Image 1 (cartoon, rainbow, N blue to C red):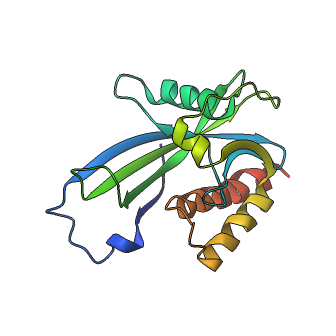
Image 2: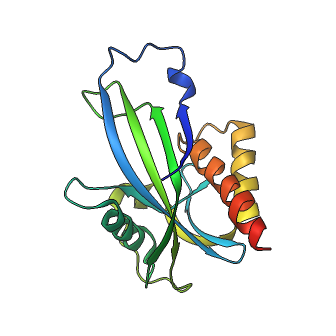
Length: 179
């Protein structure tokens, strides 16, 4: 799978990472598009749009983890993985005890699914953060996230940079080519 970007979070750019305890985390994220609409997760706490997906459990494949996460977070039905889109690798801070930072590797896949969503089964932290699946115009989602980044909202989450970067890549490399 092609590398989309490797990134080090701004809080870690001037820190020597050689002696740090780094947690490696593998995630899978789904890109489900219907014309210029895209299925994303809007999170009220962070006021941002992000891709559905999350951590892959150690006993499951990346594709199985992707399908599980899509079902849990969105209730997406009849999910099919169509193609690889790319990998976004990042070094970022973590709240996991015993680790100084995290090396998160996010695998993005183009998928298809029914437009009508079934019942999602979000985790408790997703519920408390106000996360909900939404179909939104991709340009609207990008502009919204860019505005949050520009304003440096206090509530801004760490993932907004990654999510916006990949949304822009999808728009330029996939959606605009179909038009």
